[in-house]
Image (cartoon, helix red, strand yellow):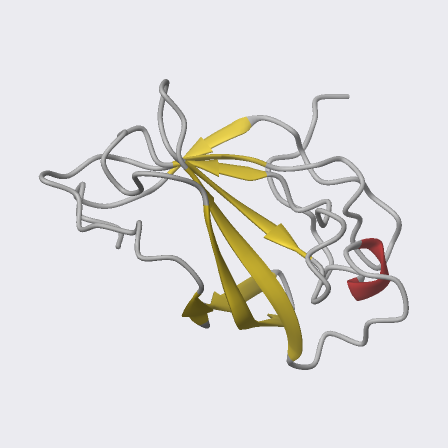
Length: 134
C-alpha cells in the first residue's frame, strides 16, 4: 500500500488542536528567519506550543530579518482546507521578498482525517507560478 498524498475524508480538527471543532480560532503564526530559507510555523494562541501542521519552507532568506510572531492570527478548517489569516506582527522585521520562489510544505502524520488515516509527510510544493508570498 502506498502512502496517500491527501486524506480521503475531511480532516479531524482535534488532530490539529485539542478540543477544536474547525471553526475560527485564534493562533500565533511565527515567521522564522533562517539562513537556509525562512520558515512559517503555526502555534497555539498562547504562543507556547507548535501545532502539528508542519512547517512551510519559503525557500528564500529575505522575508524576515529576525524571527517574528503574528499574534491574533486565525485558523479555520473546511473539509481538507486549513486557512490561516495573519494577525498583527509584534516586530518590524518582516519584509517583502525581492523576488519569487515556490514554497514547500511538509505535513505532520499527527494530522488525521475523520476515518483515522494519517496525512502524508511527503513534501509538497506550492502549485502555480512562483510569486512573492508576503
